[in-house]
Length: 59
Image 1 (cartoon, rainbow, N blue to C red):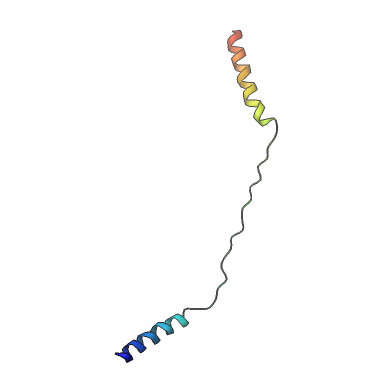
Image 2: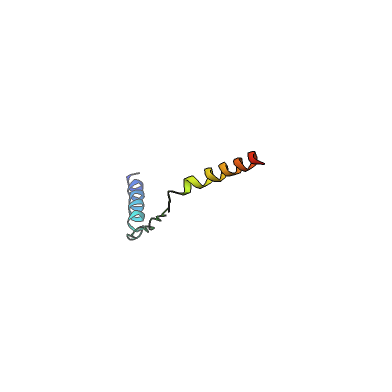
């Protein structure tokens, strides 16, 4: 029984030692997206909406 346990231990240790060599992990570069913002962007839509309401009230 001891011989069987020793043989099983050697098999497990042998497969772990033959697992392979060290390979560096592949690190993908971080993608950075630059958002262009302008101060006018938040004003244009409300102004167009105001002009549309004023045009409907005028007609």
